[in-house]
Length: 525
Image 1 (cartoon, helix red, strand yellow):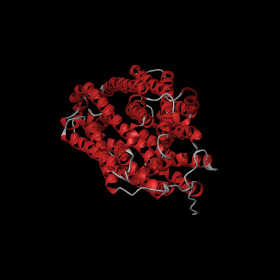
Image 2: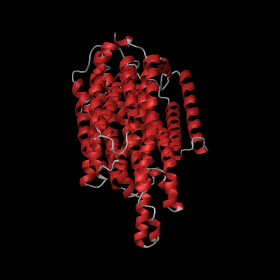
Image 3: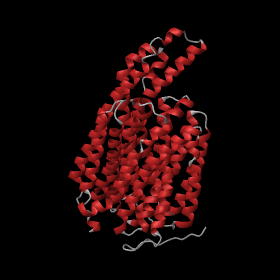
Image 4: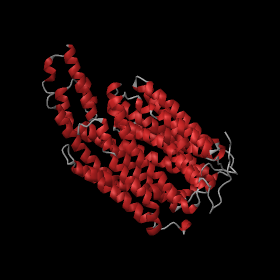
C-alpha cells in the first residue's frame, strides 16, 4: 500500500479529504463500540449455555475493560511515535482474529481470555481514531468532527442490541462475535486506502520505564476495582493490595514524569482547566452510564421477560437521544460555552436515572421510552463537548497520548461504575432474596442463587433438572412455584436503590462542572 505520511496539519488548514477520513475512522471505531452493546443482550444466553457463574460473566466483560484501559495509554504514545494508521490497522486485525476465537470457545475461561485479546486490539484502535481527527481537522472544525465521532456511540447503542437480538433469534451466541469479521475486513481496507499516516515529527526519547509504570499502575487499579465489585468486599486484601499498589505505581509514574527530560506524559495537562474539567465530565458520565447499564440490561430480559431482540429495540430511544444531542453539541457550545451544555447534559442524565426509581415490571412502555430518550440525550450532550474541550488543551503532535489519557480515564470510571453500582445492585438483591433462597435451594447452591436474578433462575433450572433425573426428591420443588415472582420483586427493589445512587452521582457531577469548568474555551475564540 502507498504510505502517505502527512506533515502535521497547519493550524487553520485541514486535510483535503478530512470528512471522508472521518467517515472511515468512525466506521472503524463502530465495530469496537457495537461489540460491547451486542454482548450486553447476549449475556444471559451465554451464561446459560456455558454454565457460567455470575463472577465468570463479570470477567467476560471486565477482562476486556482491564486490558483496554491498561494498554490504551501505551498504544496512544506508540501511535504518536511509530504511526497512528499503522497501529489502527494492526488493532483492527487483532480484534477480528480474537473475535473468531471468542465465537468458537465452549467454556467460560477461554472466552474470558479471548475477550482480553479483543481488548488488546481495541486499545490500539480507540486512541488512534481521535488523535487522527485532531491531526486532520483545523481547530474551528474539530468540535463538529468530534460531535459526529461521538454520535456514532449512539448508533452503536441502537445497532448493537438490535443486531444482537436478531442474531440470537436465528443463530447461536457465537455469531455475536463473528459479525465483527466483515466489518473488520472492510474497515482495515478502507483505513489503508483513505487514512493518511501521521506521527510526531520530533518525538522525544522513548521512556520504557514510564510506559511500564503507567501500564502496571492502571491495570493494578482497575483490577482492584473489578475485584471489589465481584466480591463486594472492598476492604479485603485481594481488593486493597492491587488498588493501593496501582495508585502507588501511578504516583511514582507522575513523580518521575515531572522530573523527566523526555516525559511520556506531560502531567501538567491535569493543571489545565480545559483538560481536567473535560476529563472529569467524561468520567462522571462513564461511571453513571456503565453503572446504569448493569441494571438496564437485566431489567428488560430477566424482570420484564422480553427476548433479546425485543430488549434490543428498547435501546433505540437511547441512541436517538444521543445522536441528536451529540450532533448539535458544537452549535450549543459555540453559542453558550461548554459549562452550561455539559452540566445540563449530566443533569438530564441524572434525572433520567432517578426516573428508574419508580419503574416496576408493569410500568407503561411510553414512560420507559421517555426516560431512555432523556438518558441518551443527556449522555450525548456531555461526551462530544467534554471530549473536544479536553483535546483542545493537547498539542497536535501529542494527540495520541492525549486521546489515550482521556479514554483511559473514561474506561477506569466505567469499570468503577460497573463495580460500585454492581455491588450496590447485588447487595440490595441479596438482602431481599436471601430468605427465599434459603428455603428453596440446598446450601451448595445458595450463594450463586443469591448473586443475581439470573443466578436465581440458573440454579432453579438446575434444581428442576436434578428432580427430573431422580437425583433429588420431588419435595425439593415445594417452594419453587413462587420463586420467580419473588426474584422479580427483589430485583426491582434493588434496581430502585441502584438507580438512585447512579442518578445522584450524575447530579453531583453536574454541580461540580458548574463550579469547575470554564464557561468558554479561550483557544477557540
